[in-house]
Image (cartoon, rainbow, N blue to C red; front, side, top):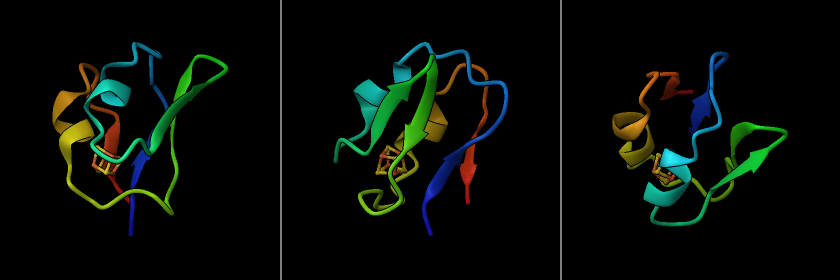
Length: 56
Ligand code: SF4
């Protein structure tokens, strides 16, 4: 299981800076989480200002 970025991402990059394993990248102005790297720490979900990152 990995966290996923839902619709509504504003591409601010806040989550990318928080991820301890570098699983998040920005693609076409949206954050994308690599499920193979994510360790389910929830740091990104807590950081997202628009609260669109959820456990997948
Ligand atoms: Fe990175 Fe943790 Fe978010 Fe997974 S849950 S993408 S490891 S910050």
